Image 1 (cartoon, rainbow, N blue to C red):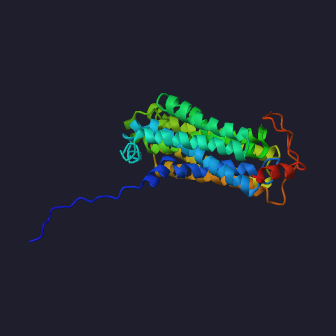
Image 2: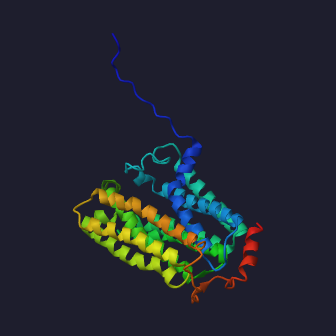
Image 3: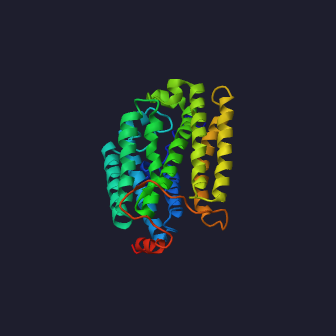
Length: 334
C-alpha cells in the first residue's frame, strides 16, 4: 500500500547575485538604455565612439539600477501587498531592507563617478537628477498621494535622452527637449495601460492610481488625450530638421498604431485584452521610435539642414560638423 500523503515542493531560492540584479529591474533598464544611447547618434556632434557608448551604457545602467533598488527599499511595504511584487528580494525576506538601500546608493555613487570621469559633468548631474526625481518626487511623494503620480513623477523616465544628448555635446538644446517631451507624454498612456490591468493589486496596496481613483472610462480618456499630445512631439524632430524623412515616416506609422489602440479601448467596455495589447505595444513603440532616430542617420536621403536651436544649457560651445571629429576624439580617448 502506497503513502498518498502529498509532499511539499521546495522551490529553489535565487542566489544573492540574482537578487541584486533583480533589485536593478533589468527589463525596465533595457528600454531606458535605448532612450539614452539612441540620442547620441542624432546630435550635431556627429557619430559617437564605441568607448563613449560603453561608458554611457555602463554608468546609465548603474544609475537607473540604483534608483530602482532604492525604490524597492522604500516600497517594501506595498510590494508585500501586491501579487506581482511580493516575491521581490526585500518583501520576500531574502534580503534585509537596509542592504537594498545601501546597494542602491552605492550604485548611484559609482554611476555619478563614471559619468563625471569618463563622459562629462553635465551628463553626471542629469543622471543624478533623474535618480533623485524618481526617488524623491515619484516614489516618496507622489506615488502614494496623487492619481497624477505617474504624470509628474514619471518625468524621471524622460531624463535618459537628456543624458545621452549631453554625453555627446556637453549641453542641452531644443533637440534634447523634444526627446524629453516624447518620453514624458508617452509615460501616462503606457503606465495607465498597465494600471488598468492591475487595479486589484494597486487597490490592495492603497496606491491611488488613475483607474482606482477616477475610474476606467476617465483613465481611457486621459490615455487618448496624452497620446494625441505625444504624436506631434514625435514628429517635431523631423519638422525642425534634426531627423530626416525615414524617421518622420516611422514616427507617423508607429504613432498611428498607438492612437488606433488607444481609440479602440475607449470604445470597449471595461478592461479588455486590447488594453494589455496596448501596454505591450507601448513598450515596442518607444524602443522602435528611438531606434528609428539612430537608423535615420545612416539613410542617405531625406535630410535637410538642422534648424537653429534657441535654447542651450551647459558650458560647452555649440558643435558644428567641422568641430565634431575633435569633440568625438576627446570622448573616445577615455
